[in-house]
Image (tube, rainbow, N blue to C red; front, top):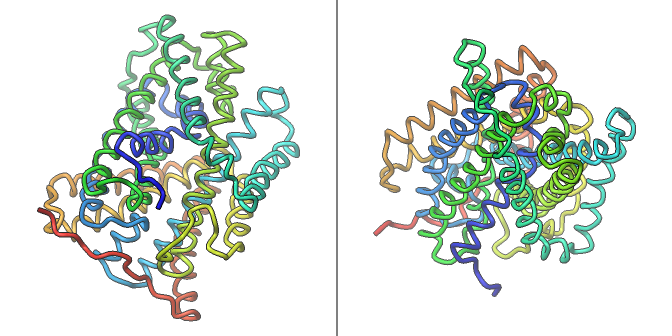
Length: 434
C-alpha cells in the first residue's frame, strides 16, 4: 500500500488545489465587479466558504470515503433521481473547471506573446492544452504527477513575491471601501463569484481514505488549507487594488495579475507571474482531469466507485476522458471568462448546498451546530440567487447555459436510470463518534 498522507501533506494538497487558476484568472473580473471592495469580497467569500467547510469537516468524521460529497448526500437522502442528477452535476463541475483552466492558460500565454486578440489562435491553444493532458493520461503522466508538489510550491512562491513587492507601493486611499449601493452590490456579486476560488477544499474529502487518521486530519486539513488560502487571496487583492491602476487591470482581464505585476516588479514581474499562471493552470488542469473528473465520471456512470482503483486511470472506460475533454473545450470556446466563472461557481454552489442539506439531515450523528448549518444553507441559497440574477442581466448566455445544464442533468438522469437501472450505492457506513 502507498504511504498515506499526514496532516501537513493533506493540508498542502488542499492549498495546492484551492490556489489554482482562479486567483490568476478572476482578478480582472473581480476588479470590474467589486472595484475597491475586492479585498472585502475575498474575505466575505472566505467566511461563506468556512460555513460550508464546517459541514464537510463534520461529515468527513463519520463518513470516510473517496466518493466525498456524493457519499454524504446518499446517506442523507437515499437513492433517487435528484441524487443521481447531482452525481452528474458533480462531474460537470470538473468539466467546466477544466474549461476555465484552459481559457486562463491560453489568456496568459497569448497575452505574454501579444497575440490575445486572435480568436482562431485562442481556440487552437485551448484545444492543444486539453489534448496534451488527454495524451498524458494514456501515457500514465507519472512525471507530471510527481512534479505536482513542485508546481504547487512554485505558484505559491510567485504569489508571495507579488505580495511582498506590492505592499511597499500601496496607496491607502485606493483601499477605502465603496459603501455606495452600487459598491455594496458589486461586493456581494464578487463574493458569490469568488466562492469558486475556495472550491478546492472539498476535494480533500475525495482523498479521505488515503489520509492518516482521517476522522481528525481531514477536518483539520480542510480548515487549515482554507485559512492559508484566504490570507494569500486577501493580500493579493489588497496589492492589486492598492498598488495598481484599476484601468490597467480591467483592460487586461484575461491575464490581469501578470499585467498588475508590471508596475510593481517590472517586465521581470510580468514574466514571473505569467509563468506562475501557466504552471498553476496546467497543474490545476492536470489535477481536475486525472484526480477529480475520473472519480466523478465513475460515480455518475456506475453509481459507485470500484473498491480498488488507480486515480489516474479512467477505470477502463476511456470514453469518459474523451467526453470530459470535448465538453470542456466546447465550453471554453462557447463562453467568455466571466460566463465560465459564473457557471463553474453555480455548479459548485449546488454541490455545497447539497452537502449542507445533507448535514442538516445528519446533524444528530455529526453533533453539528444547527445554527451554523442553517446559516450555511441561507448563505448558499442567497449566493446562488445573486449569481443567477447577475448572469441573467449581464451574461444571458451563461445564465441559459447554467439553467440548461441543471434541468438537463435531471432529465438525463431520469432517462439514464430507466435505461441502465443504475442505482447510487453507499461505499461506507456511518462511523459512530466517540
